[in-house]
Image (cartoon, rainbow, N blue to C red; front, side):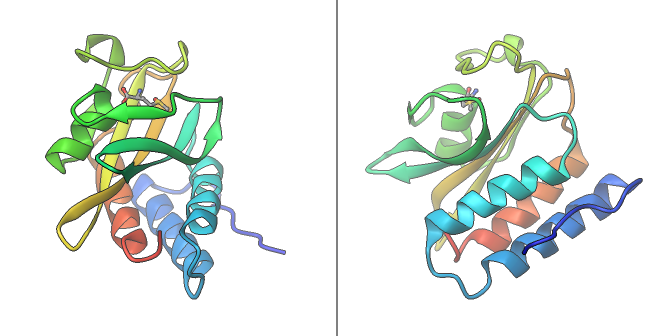
Length: 160
Ligand code: SME
């Protein structure tokens, strides 16, 4: 049985450190990328408060395709440059969006989503996937969240 759970009353930095450690431990030695993304989606859902979606889009033949996630069913294919995920994939840069209603071209998969954080996963200089977190809480994500998920993306770069 796996029993990865965050300690209570953690600072965001410590919470992300424990999340990255749990993801490292769960994916080490497993070669199947889908299995690893599925477990990390579940970990993000478990460790991070106030989310309504947590998961992956993978780069497949030049577009983003839905990968393992926790939350409600979501859009399946996202062209590069479209929405928050497409922007992160095209630019290779983390996107922190306080209010998705104010983001031009935001793709609404769940009307409850208000804030979004998207972090590219880069291997050998190319974006191979993005990690996407949604929250119903405006301005849910900040610099600590971006840094924490970027660390997670580095852990996963050779495991998905
Ligand atoms: N809102 C995203 C699409 C993916 S869903 O949030 C799961 C976007 O604008 O790229």
